[in-house]
Image 1 (cartoon, helix red, strand yellow):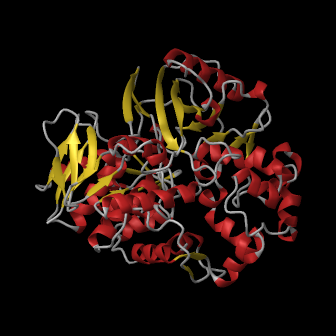
Image 2: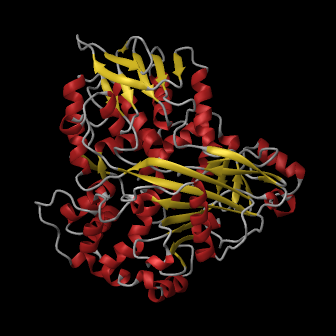
Length: 576
């Protein structure tokens, strides 16, 4: 019998879910400081004149490949497929992604576009200056010294390619994922494969060519995970649906995932939730056989045989009373992001596509608001016009019923309906949908700001961004401002060594009784949090002595079989 304890956002919920599944006899206690469970997953409906609009304060879509296979599995295991929205690979949301530079949107090259269109963009757009030549000559450049243990993403890619590529393209990508500074983030931690390619093959391009010829090189841990994911007993229709999409979401937003996890866990007799119960102290018991947890207002501590913490590093240091030079986890910085949701009555105020990100090289006068990017939220969810049967590939009622009975995938414009539900999923419940956007502000731009913008200031900043970049002067019919403090950990140079130090400290101080999981280790996305939870629970199930960080810095690599010409592109996700 195991007694387990969690702090609870999506990582904590997933940890509890996997433990209840893998060790059903375990008694699980979930601690949450607030009265709300779900962390950064926050979806809410707001009223407009003809219905309701769904706003996402945090993440809004999930990818089904790599670590995202775990999210896709949860769709099946939690019976969420019928509530899922699957944009097709051919949809504008999948094909059209933009970068703003220097004063206009530039659509990034895509294999679906014509060769002439891609080449013309590469040659004429200032954002791609030096990109072609630096790509062609990368293989001729000397590899780094063996003495370099880590360097910034900016330094690495400017050495291998050019500083222009970093400032105008790569920094924009990092704004969209980490809200971070390309010249501070760690190349070794963010791009481990390319970092290793330079050391083992002499250049990034040589490593890519070798992977195509001999197979992709991954850690043994990753190879074992991929093999396990391939052996999963998929529902055939869901598997077919996932292969034809690059992202997915839910009709009531990503908050449905955490809500469904909570509902599932509430139904388990061995799971107890303690909300509005912040943990004040964590310590190893005197006989080292358990970990003592003291809640803030509790009279006495409780003992648990094992504890999984999904706290941030700074909070974990606080509750273990190990801060400063004696910190359990060395300092890992984080950034604050403000997201501003805007809904306009007029439709199609943005170009077709998923959205755009803004690079660090953008002139200040074109981005004085210090925005990171803008998401076109109406791109990845159907609108009322998609419910019109005349637009459907199959319109006859008997054919529709037959297709559903036979488990066929139904395509409607740019979306796929899983198992042909009676009412296809829409996020916005309106008769005529307008334009919905989310502006992302802050991140590393705000690192030195003594005071952050308030709600009205945030709204004004967001409206200024969309007016300058998209020409939108219309008053929003609905809006929401969301301040998310310290929401994204920053994997700055030396991140791997800090994680190794944390592993050694936790192992020494807690003797395998305390383990950690979360976004501060090996990826900041929802899918990465699921993977962190999955791995830490598997370690417990298998009786391995670990901390959740034992895999950091592994040197055990294997090569996967290469993807041969002629094999379907979508099959790559299963092996890479």
